[in-house]
Image (cartoon, rainbow, N blue to C red; front, side, top):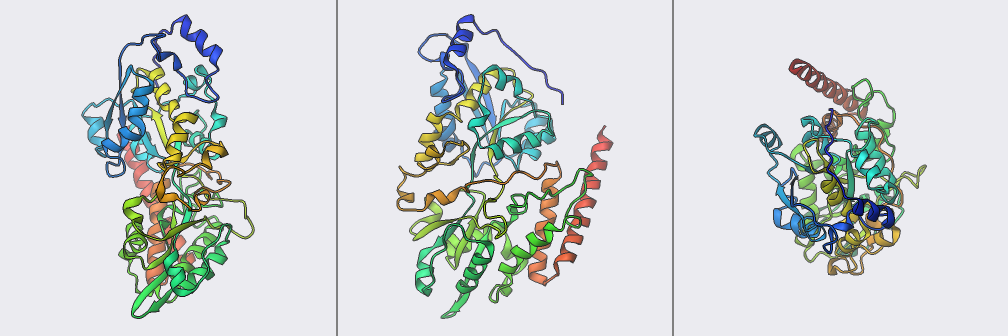
Length: 443
């Protein structure tokens, strides 16, 4: 998301017996013998690195992840680094045991630095049950390795859903969005909500569209096995782009310039300016600071008419054990605990995150102890079925960036889809070739 030296330390026969008896794969993470003084373990410090400091300030990380791990395993002390300066950390010699990153950030902050490490031996050793985790998220984790094992465990996933401002729908007398809408139905609704009222321009739909290609419901790979972009080769991209761009070509949207179409600008129009009636969210749960006093609710992610069961691909957050980790058993115990029913249920109830588990009972309790979600249609935050990752490439982010640049350009300059796709592929391929040449020069 390389050869790796695996480190082991001796485990007493008592611990082995305990693990065999308890069968730790079903409800909780492995390693319960560290509690209650049954087996005293030597103190261990594990360094956890997250590359986006604004997303997880240290205090928030420890409240959600760090403190529960340290309480569960008193011999473990966590050191949290969230500088976002991956290169500086690596070149300075800072050891990292665990990388915590989304699938989209895993290439730049794990794989590009040779920090990846197969945790299949630990999964087998602790009898960890991968079937408890969403199969699309596990499948994505395996594809990141190129079929060479699995580097990390998915812990949670952002929503894939439509947030909508009920006050705007009430203002214009338009029925609210509903679960199970097709993209065509959403488009018609967006047209109704795009209007000028008393000098104020309102818009139907905004989105974090920069992630929609990566998460596309058709499981189209962005880069093929030949390390070239697929935009000008796979006809499904035309369907994808035409479907998305039409929302931004409704009369009223023509005032937008390229800079107005960033994800942050889209998000601000919905949460801050409140002149967009619907926001297609894919990257984060939107908290009290953003929502404030908005009279909002949630509807499920739109589907294509000919594939009503196909949700978007997931965009999960993984906890990876790195190639630098020496206390691998302790690191595995720590990250595995984050998938336990105990840990997941508390955070799901508190509305902290959406579960990576298949357990529908836990998923159904999202936000039950958070007043922000009282009376909200929270079941819509996750699709019934995630689509599988089409393919993984180290150049996925490069290709996605060029496609999104092309989409913005096409919206503003009214460029046709075929030209957009051809030019995006040409730009992506040029960058891929440059990256390949640079990598070859280092060898």
